[in-house]
Length: 173
Image (cartoon, rainbow, N blue to C red):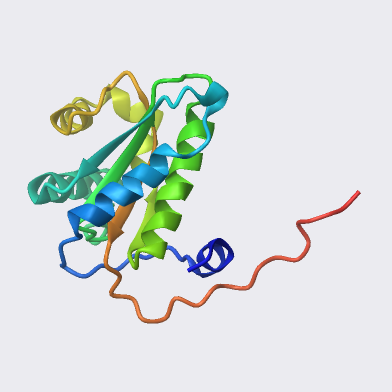
């Protein structure tokens, strides 16, 4: 798949198969994340690949309670969650966002589905002891800024057609 096709056909996936993702694919996806641009090329982003089913289930229960919605699943049932954090306070969002996009495109090119998850990045969660315990248990440095995470796995969705794009958001000078 060429780069243009990959960009134009990638979709957010919210239904995943209960199927293990090959370690080689995970490593290639993380390698692509590491090749994202970063401020002054300092590469301050950090990737935490979470495959632990108990942790994924528990974090989902935590967010169900937080949202008061028993049907909500923060990972959409994906077998993997990649948490992307960054130690560069000034450029964390920019650095890690580029890395997240690389991760999502690489996963799509390898036949996997992804969805960008923002819930773990809420700054007020650092004051929640239960959440901090989850983060520390996964080995994430609580001093880093969690910018986002990526639900990753094999898609069980059939129709992933793109929604129409807006036409009024570009101008040329």
